[in-house]
Amino acid sequence: MKPTPTTVLDQAHADLPDRAADALSAHRAPYVEAVKATLGAGDGSNTPWVGATPEQEMAWYGTSVLVIPKPGAGVGTERWLGTLVRVLNRGDVLEVTRPGTPWGRLSAPTPSDTIRLSVRDYDVLRASDLVDDFAPAPVSTDLSSGYEKGAAPQGDFNVPGKHILDRAKVTGDAEVRGDATVGGYASVSGNAQVSDDAKVYGNALVYGNASVSGNALVSYDASVSGNAKVTGRAKVSGFATVSDDAKVTGRAKVYGDATVGGYAQVSDDAKVTGKAEVTGDARIGGTAVILGGKWDGSEGKITEGTWKSPTERVR
Image (cartoon, rainbow, N blue to C red):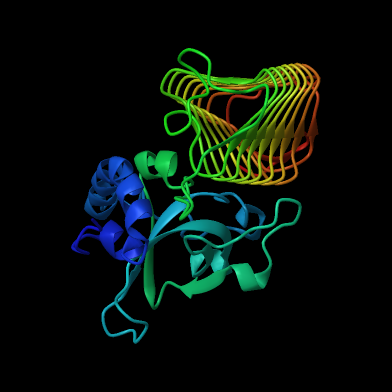
């Protein structure tokens, strides 16, 4: 049965059909703990976009956020988990998508897909990494799992309801094994491997000989292909692509319209976003933030700072 709406998450999902609500129950505990952690943070870590510059407009693209109407603002009382798209007016206005907003696979969100929230009316808080791990996973009202000829369950992999959820598809010689899951409308094909506790959700694509492992997350309209590897607690989201022999490891994040290819490596706590192109033998690690430009390794290993291009450091 559907749970009584007594928590933030119950309120957000109270209108789901019973079967979908039941399917969500296994994921509710991590969400609830993450929301508690978000509400308990008072050190500014959950509003990192305050004072953001125009160059940082897309720096937090794909971040899970908790939206809380302020008392007396006249905007209702519903709290919900959404996804940050853009930061405007030095952080005073945030563009956010609500749960279930349909984004096209090949096009960026349009204004009709997003809501602009003023911080005068709402508290918009960055959810903890735990929410970020689970939030992109949509729960379909049609819970039939999809797999096609050539990817039928064999042994302990490609098992519908365990490895393949919602309307996701696993085809060809691809394998999803261990505690890994593929959900939403995601597709894993070719000889791709998804293993350990990795998750592939949204409209994401994993194909070729690519592998996603560890606690990695690939979500939204991102793609991982070729011989690329995404592992550790790395996250690839938005419209980002990781291809060829590239590797994304550690707690690194690749999002926005960024591309990582060649033999490039993005590691540690590095972030690559915007329209950045990281290829060749590029090495991005440490706490470096790459907002754009073309990187091929000739600039040496980058482990700190915020960069618009290899020749323009922001800070």
